Image (tube, rainbow, N blue to C red; front, side, top):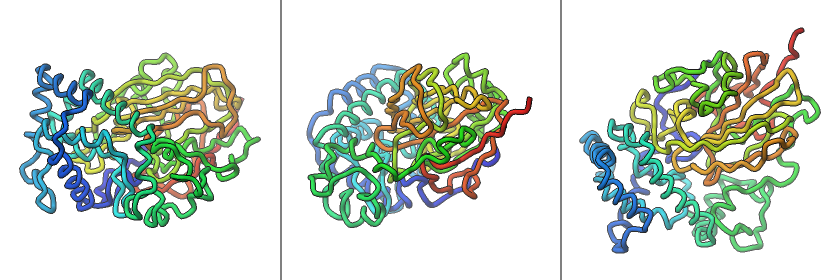
Length: 422
């Protein structure tokens, strides 16, 4: 990789997690207080998870280890608030979250509430082993699917027009998204600006003309597939590599789930970028061409690379690593430009951003800039893959890939492909 930042940072890339630990502590205290006062039984999907943990030897071991292994110095946060005590406490907090949509908070948007609950346990040996376990991930998926159904229901829209502090259309949110009504399709005269649920708000569409496609008639220009910030750029990628080590090199075979097409990209180029919580969450075709194949690959949700150590914004520091393991959607496109040929877009879910919806189909022709799919509940990270024959020069708008970059608009130019020499 040309650069992969691992530096300590006091901000939350993309505003998914709080800018500072104090904000996270305050949010956790609110959720813990609700859980302590709640005498309702666990929801069926949470009760099923509890039954599984207590009747599967490995799960029982992992979910005890991951909380026991949290360093004693981290058992209390900055204000003395206890961290999640054990898996019983974890399940009670999950139970609270499942009927709550995320509030807006100007001091730090907690966009990953389950991630916040698992903050320290994810970085332990028990957490690392547990969160790559297939059976455990099936139960986590069931819980996240349940939350996803709530976020698509009318009951989740209450946070949109809440008070100025926590409402997404309040005064504080307006400062963070000052051009919202001009940029996005909405109707401020309607309840919740016309959005019928939290999910509908989060997958909102731009108004026509807001994100024009760069050089629509020039097939040598590649555009940004998402509203996203450059994270990594790697060349001469390998079929298999030790993606779990600190440099997090890509491993094509695992990223593409053993698809034979992975061989086409060996020795080629991968560009990765991450999305912002406050912006746009749909995907668009980076090139014009024919959809060759689409697939959604199930995977992990809370696995992070052990090599990066404790990541308070997990799994932000592990974005290269999770491209091989996390739930992801793959779209292969045979570009109209023969100098590109077969390329691939990979949408990668991070933590509870686990639903990758593909809206194109095999055999369909797409024009550069056409919608290809979306993340539900916000955004995550994504990759563009090009074969070794593609002579591609990236224009990342003066930025070096890493965690301190800013968004490049969707449909804006990010690269130029040079004509292949005969």
